[in-house]
Amino acid sequence: MGGKTSHSGVAGTLTPPTSEQFCGEFSSLLFASLRRKEQRYKAEQYVCGLLMRPGRKTLRNVAAQFGGEAAQQSVHHFIASSPWEWMPVRRVLARCVHEAFSPLAWVIRPTMIPKAGNSTIGVDEHYDPRLGQAVNGQQAAGVWLASDRSALPVGWRLLLSERWMEARSRRQAGIPEGAAAADLDACVRGAVDDVVETREVPRIPVVVDAELADSVGLARHLAALGLPFLVRVDPMEQLRLDPGRLPMYGGRERTAGELVKTLTHLRRAVNLGDGPTPAAAIPVVGRNRSAIPGGAGLFLVGEWAGDGRAGGRLWLTGSPPSALAQVLALTRLPAVVKRDFGAISESVGMTDFAGRSYQGWHRHVTLASVAHCIAAWPMRTSGAD
Image 1 (cartoon, one colour):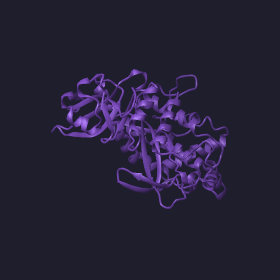
Image 2 (tube, rainbow, N blue to C red):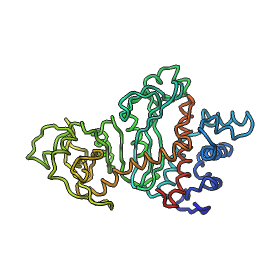
Image 3 (cartoon, rainbow, N blue to C red):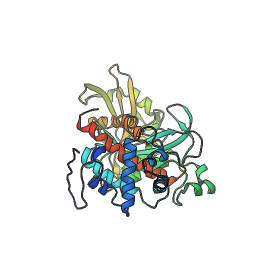
Image 4 (cartoon, rainbow, N blue to C red):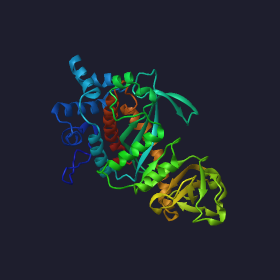
């Protein structure tokens, strides 16, 4: 940033500015898909409000910076019902983030957003595996570009339960005809499809950190798409050792946790720069599943603490054991996403939308993602973690 922009490519790209410099060229690039100058101005000012307004970043509070009741109503209309598309903005944002931050991978990670009442779009009772109980709120799958230093949101999928598909709720929320009720697995798969369709970012690995999703099914889906991948797997997931690689062990199904615990001879020390970590890539096949598309193998990745006890999460990948160091580096990225969501996303209002409008939610989180990326930039240039 630092007030200096750089360009490359036919369409033009540049480094995002700090919040004080969010104007002119960068704003014009991000919001070029908005047809009217007034729309581009409101988008720019809305982002500035998310960055600078104190307190919760509800639509009402952000709109309050626009003087007069008529102006505030106009901003409300701009977010909730004005006919502008959010996906083109997200794709340009992804391109800028990729060029400026050099991410290692896409990270897809569900987020639970507790809410009071049941009128906000997407709110329902959702099971939260971290708490072991149902929570009233929204559940969304975030699409992030992440490195070991920073994670930046560039896309979102909102889970809509059957309650929101009822005719009255659907009409009041403006839910489009193409949207259907979905479980977490379908929501995550939709986020994967969004990644595939983002042509502005070159091919990099996809990391899916989603409890309760069909991990083997997601691994097969990503392999079929030809993408390098890492998918979190539940320790209780039933797997079989790959008979083509470990024929002496037979084909009995065992849990992922049991396989990691018992196959100690497959462990080897991997050094990621902070000392050796015992880890293993165990060749497996999914329960009652045929081979992974394209003939690629499937490996269960686990790591151990210094005392030999299994620690951390378990993952499925198509990368061979020779790439174990690179795979383990990717397993660290969801923690960066979690950290930056709490440190930055929440402060710029990512979880504050309280309206019923489906379009309004998507536009708000899109502009909040822009605000997050601008807020994250000084942290990167100053070398802060």
